[in-house]
Amino acid sequence: MSAEPSGGSAVMAVAPEGVPNVTASDDLAALLTPVLHGVVWPDGTAGVGDGDVVVISSKVVSKAEGRLVAARDDAERESAIDGETVRVVAERPKPDGGRLRIVENRLGLVMAAAGVDTSDVPPGTALLLPEDPDESARQIRRGLNARLGSRPGVIVSDTAGRPWRRGVVDMAIGAAGITVLSDLRGTRDQYGRELETTVIGVADEIAAAAELVKGKISGRPVAVVRGMAHVVTAEDGEGAGSLVRPPEEDMFRRGVRET
Amino acid sequence: MSAEPSGGSAVMAVAPEGVPNVTASDDLAALLTPVLHGVVWPDGTAGVGDGDVVVISSKVVSKAEGRLVAARDDAERESAIDGETVRVVAERPKPDGGRLRIVENRLGLVMAAAGVDTSDVPPGTALLLPEDPDESARQIRRGLNARLGSRPGVIVSDTAGRPWRRGVVDMAIGAAGITVLSDLRGTRDQYGRELETTVIGVADEIAAAAELVKGKISGRPVAVVRGMAHVVTAEDGEGAGSLVRPPEEDMFRRGVRET
Image (cartoon, rainbow over all chains, first blue to last red; front, side, top):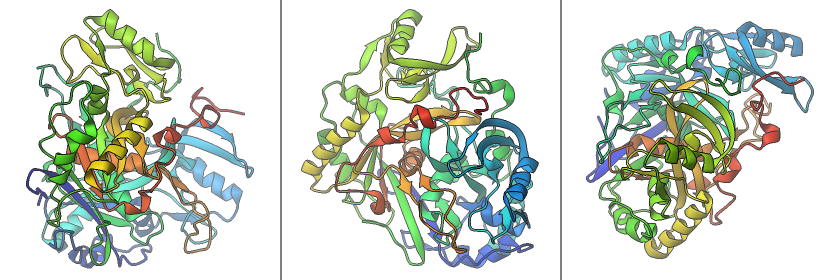
């Protein structure tokens, strides 16, 4: 299903309209199937195929999994964040009072407020990230495979800030049927030397590309990316958990020189 | 020029073949013009238009700007890195000997080896980042505008690792004619509350999307992204320098709790 116009490689990302509001215990795969059948690509083709990647905002996955908790006041909001927090990485007072905390959550993701979401959720509630986003992606993939008759890869995406860079970007927090890290080790340049840049965070780049069409409040929480069939796999694979850098590789635990 | 299939929004990224090897004092805009004229989109249209974004790997920009320096041995390579380094953020011994240094370079970018590149360059040399990637982007944009008769946005992209995440991703280190930060402040969700996630690093997401088609050693150092006309501006704008988080906003300078 890879899009290959003459003389180059191409990727397309489409975010279909018409995804209904998702609530607890909705079957996301069933709910998305008609929407995905209706996807129309710039080249005029329609639907979702084997080499495509379906990118779903974690918000709708969490809503389907009933991850809403009470957050009627700051205390309840803070306790929801505490419940997801494994380690405080950085903390500072907010202009509006309260404290901004960048923490490592139980998924190993370093995020503001541990990834607890109070935007676009019912007043008095907060939305936790999926319990196991890789398992969520696997389940959605199985459901889509059964209903679509095709076997796209699935990414569960979330939005996070970065150290040293302004602006948030989307990344992959769950994945199934995707090579999340594209390993170029052993690849040689035109001078016969091995490349320095060896492992590409391709699932994060696909999630970022999908955000360009999904947007934040567009009512388009799902995008399909076509042209990346070379990273879509028959097996579910190791998932986005493998994108989390293990502590022993983390040079920023102390933010200082190691000798 | 935005690609808008029925019932959703779409983005396309194409990396054309046929970009010649770039050497010092090449006029990149002149060199890229025939290649960009030859771009064929998945929808069958051709060429590069006003709302498109041309994403160029910093490697070819640096080569055109004569940023190759001698690096015949480790000492010369280290001194090239030292010359670009403003601040060492983290440092650790490499398995193969030598030291891996994550540093802030003179552009404010936090990168391994200060962004000094020894891949895919002639033996005995190293490639420095462009002196001023935003100015590079402005010059290339002017040149493309004069030659193409259209006014695409221009991004100069580079590849970097991230703390806490495995794998490298592309980001925007130079930009002209692009809204690099998409500011949603004041936008309200369906419940009337302001969004928490307010500023999107859209130029970094476009650079990441472009990397999906450019690849590292594919001989395709340039990609064109269509469907983002809403962030392409008539003015050159503030550039990718504004994506660099100023020290007073940087919660990771000490990697510890601030009280």
